[in-house]
Image 1 (tube, one colour):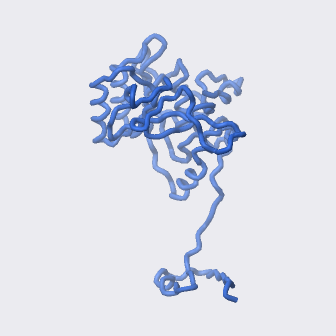
Image 2 (tube, helix red, strand yellow):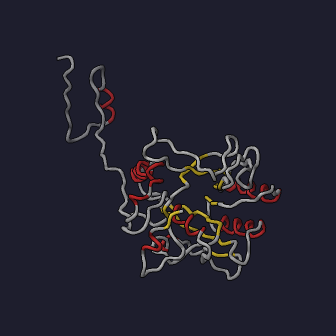
Image 3 (cartoon, helix red, strand yellow):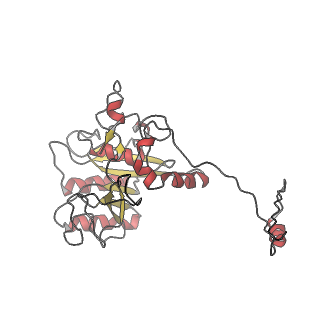
Length: 286
């Protein structure tokens, strides 16, 4: 019959030259390809991480695994520090992590830095806690603490922290903080690292305003090596579509915000965990 399809599989694949010659109208000859299931980590709380499903993390992880062993990447987290001994972070904490306020250590007293670190690079597929977006890439979390309870955020400490992270090999640096006024030095300073191919990822802000009209910094700087990210929230199940929505607090801006990512009910690591009470560090939502 005209619609009959015959499939043949050769045990020993022919050379590419023969494959090219055998292809003709009505005949398709191609090398067989191995398949695998989509990568699904076994972290205890993975099923509750709606954000990873929304960004199609499993498909991305599968692509990385197919490409072979992934190279290591150092990510700088310029923030409040990191909980070094957290079981979902400890093996990922870069030994060069440090601080520029109080004692020169990176221990987190606020929680914000640890939360960011877990989202970026929590140890994944270890049967505990949460999964991170970067699995299976080997991420080294270089936490640089530039504020604490007694020392508020300021540009000078931020600049020191950024310079340190770049000097220690960070190629991606997270900046989840902002200034209400433009700062010429900070703008120049961030742009100066473009020649070293350092990417800065800046939070768009939480005032619920349009950054095109009321800019905040550094997210609104027009720099080749800076990406501004706004938050999205999950639409209720009864909604008629599967699109995300902008939460009321998130800043936005068609010209100044580059991408959006889940930012509500995101499950991540807690800085105040207690090994005897694992629920305290495994169930932190921000």
